Length: 328
Image (tube, rainbow, N blue to C red; front, side, top):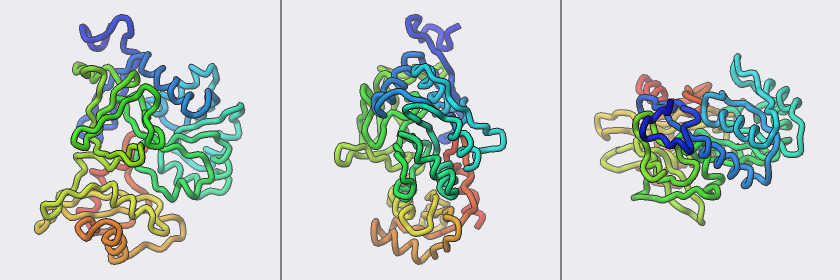
């Protein structure tokens, strides 16, 4: 039975229903046709240099993991599947990579997994075996790209676009990206049919993300609903996170707005450090952001965590991080 009833296309019916992470509210059911999934897989292989053998290191119920299975099906290969029952570990990644054989080796990871891998020398060497590692789900620390010594391909996309559809800032073949007052709008053959009971129009998805073009590459600055309004000034967390990512010893960072009686919201940052690193002081953080951006963008609160709370396939849980900062 078609999931969208009269809105479904009998020539290209809905193939799968993927549940979103609910980062912007209640989770939704995204309806993807077989043609969208296959178009994404074909465009990915074209961009990476050809089909290959994949390691599945993400839950298959999320779009990034599901697309590893689709790409393997299209390539006629069998993926190596990591055991994630006890969570992702660097040792498990190393052992799974040893089982991977083929001419081209690929995997798809989230930044938190990359961080754990780079803390382990054996896992780091395993990472460097791959011809390409797709990294998405949240902003990527530029230092990770430099430290890895591997071919890390940053991806931007979502369940509504059958996964990553912009690689290293460049849309995949057939994918269109437009900016409507800074809001990112994506079109093309990889776009979903719509949400359960709410089809998209003209195969376009109006995202809740903000971005701009720089040297013909898309730069995503963050979600519009994550914008911080402090003292009447709009502050995008993305650029602040980029600055803090470049500070020595910072492995992961999330910047959020915390209620403030004077400013409305104050800029606050949660950091995770690399092993053995010393935490920067709030004064050091403020000075760095003020120098590179502005005093208004500089965090007024700082907390160091052992790990970031996550949701979905590995996205930082901004709501949970905000609550932590509110309680400190």
